[in-house]
Image (tube, rainbow, N blue to C red; front, side, top):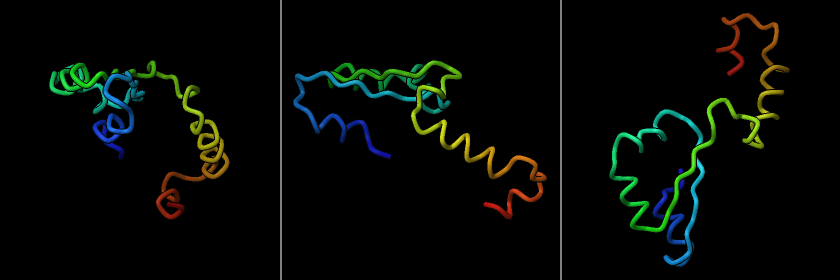
Length: 84
């Protein structure tokens, strides 16, 4: 995973950057632990979260969903470990 500090280093400090995160539970921990938010404010970075249940906003999600249904529809649950 690419770190936020690395992404920040790619642009001059006066340029505000936005890092878009999905609603995966560890990403939302920034609301509980203030250290990441404090770093973002000091570094001119904004974290933006996708809305819950918005996989359609992720451009790669649709092809993977179609592949999952194509590969796994009608397959018993016990057979999925063998397919992995």
